[in-house]
Image (cartoon, rainbow, N blue to C red; front, side):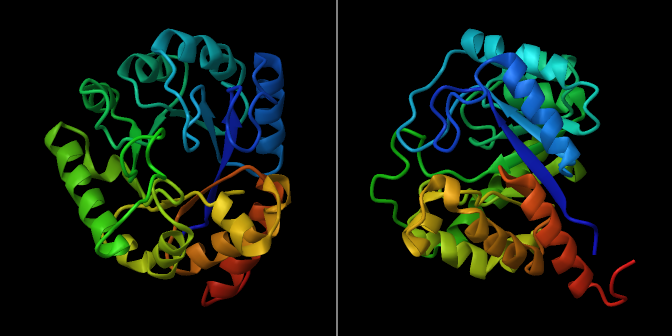
Length: 268
């Protein structure tokens, strides 16, 4: 088993569901990123556009204004940098600034130029499943079989990426927990995550602080660390490789213990 990788969230936005506005100032976001690395984050995922349910889109110029100084300020933070964007223009600038991962919630569907940017840079790319778009994704989401449907989508997007010149070994897959799914859908995806792992690419899971955890526990957004830990450990056991979270220190510790338990030879 490869050691799990924790991706720390750096939202440079005024309206993200969990910490909107808290790190909108570049200096605050940079300090937060350094703190997450100190807590054990191997990747920092920097985003300048909220993708919470109902979020309104942001133009590329404004998105770049938010993220560019943060990426520059985190270039020596000691972790890989990921740009959370659906836009070719933003990704190109972020990659030039030191990012080496593109995290695209649209799975290369929203901007026809993004696949070419990723292919030219030969960088890693995360393709995520989302039903519709952020403004509409939670309006009565329906599936025949959520796991089979999400798997088919991710396989199709993987094939598209490879056809566009992206090396298959550069692609990560994300089932998009909370992106056009009910609480029952999210739980079914976690329960059967091994079916997505079977596609053969690293699977990214992002359950951190999401609303389905609140529905189960009754906890508010900032009180969902335990639920995030539980879902992350379950996802690890089912084969997930990368964990996108806000509460890095707690999840790093939980995954270290879980990984040591799951290893045949125990802790190193």
